[in-house]
Amino acid sequence: MKIDRIHHVAYRCRDAKETVEWYTKNLNMDFVLAIAEDQVPSTHEPDPYMHLFMDAGGGNILAFFEIPQSPPMGRDPNTPAWVQHIAFKVDSEKDLHEAKARLEANGVDVIGPTDHTIFRSIYFFDPNGHRLELAADVGTPEMHAKLDEVKWAMLDEWSRTKRAPKHAAWMHEKEFAG
Image (cartoon, rainbow, N blue to C red; front, side, top):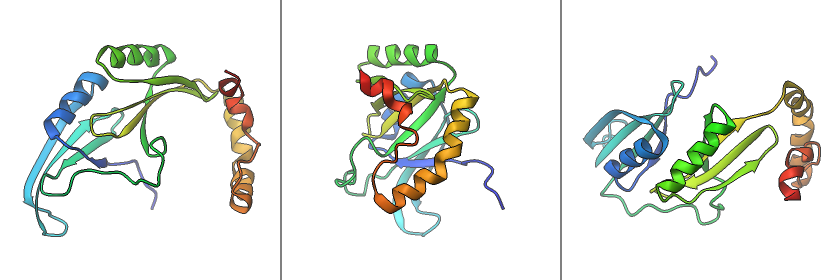
C-alpha cells in the first residue's frame, strides 16, 4: 500500500462561521462541506460538533471542528508557536507578494517574505491561533539534487548529535546575512 494523498487535515476552531469567512476572505478557499452531529461517529461519545471542510486546492482539504462543549482551545506550551503550522503552496513569488498585501490590508500581521533559497515564504496566524505559511517554490533542479544527496547524512548526524548539520547551511545564508 502507498498513500495516494492527504484526504483532509483537521484542526479545531473557536467559531465555525468565523473560520469559514476568514479562509474565504483571506485565502480564497471555497467552503465545500459541513457535517454536524450530536454524537461522535467513531467513538459514539455524546459531543456535539460542527465539522467544516475548505478547499485548499489540488484536491487538498483543510477541515475544522468546532466543539463547544469542550474546554477552551489551547496549545502545547512546550512547543514554540513557529513549529506547528500549515504551509500552502502558491504559484509564484508575485502571488506571494500579492497575498501578503491582501492579508495586511485585511488587518493580518504577516512575517516575511523569508528566503529559504528553494522557496520563499510568508507566515501569519488564522483567527484560531493556527500558524499558516504561504510558500512559492524557486529552487532549481540542481539545488534539489544537492539537498537530496545529503538528506540521509544530515539525518544520521542529527540523530547522533542533536546539533544542526551544516550540509545544507547554504540554504539560509542570504536570510541570515540580512
